[in-house]
Image 1 (cartoon, rainbow, N blue to C red):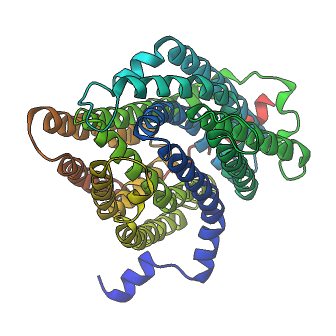
Image 2: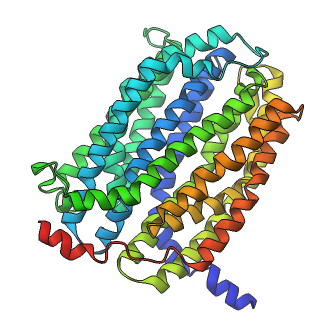
Image 3: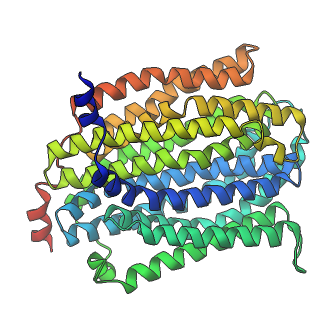
Length: 474
């Protein structure tokens, strides 16, 4: 293929990048600030000691599974929301909104029951390795204290995800961003006040960090909900939203058919990530601390490809809903190339800061060394992960949720987890190399993703026949 043809296929014009960045940058800013403040939160807890930092890291890994369950549970209906918006079908959006509420309430109630009944056991699952680097009993106690408070933040988190996801799918990304920015500022302020006990307030340590997070989530929920309901001219679908909570059975079936694989996928993927961390944790508490430090920085840099992946779902989904298949394919090619290019730059920057960042933490020298090396591995494989993320959202935008289920969670359980499990327990391989081997295993996934995207199996309008249907229902 000639260079001019390649340029035309993978590089857009100024108008194209303005459109993409108009969607991606607000998401990037919101997630970036959220992760940056989470990093500061992590550093503040890390100043107290290794046990406190490790206890909080383990609980956050568990809550991460819940967060992705919510994301997966809402994503199936979200595919329809983006395409309904492309058709200007408000009644269709209302149906997806109500479905999201029911799904989120069920998942949140289940999570609260699970954490209340088995939270201690789940934390102990990560504390079966060596005690090198800290006291395992103290780590368990700090983790339990943090978890009980964090459960109070699940309901507002649930409501933010319902409203913010719908706003984004309908092209409104600025308001969720502003709410997120406000929330992280509240979180940062109260972290400082309550972790260390400033201005006469008690020094609550890990409990203070949890209280600050919960407060910030209620602030974020209030901003998003109030704005949505007071701007009905911009959010016309909100009119009459709570007039009924019924969702037509025929649409529930459609949402479940498309959405259940996504819910199962996100649940299995998040639990696989938790299992990978558990595999590494058998090498000692220093590894838990080092991974926590590395993942904290990695999350900040990952906001670029995560936001661009979300943008693929929104932009390409709307084009598919409008029946613009050729434009959808062209847009997708350029967005994938853009994501890989941006993340190559991010990876270079991440390599530069890898020796410096771990020094901020009050932990053991071994944990700092492990953190630096984990960061370097994560940076090297960042462009690869950018492609995989964009490919995942490309397939999902066309409703290929069963394909994404096998592409994502089935792969990680069948390939990544066995690699980590076997190498961590049955070999003496250095734990940093184990992390690299898991990433190398994803080369198979890259080939599969490339073939599926290139073949265009995702090029379909899944709501083409729903316009008349929702009109009849209403």
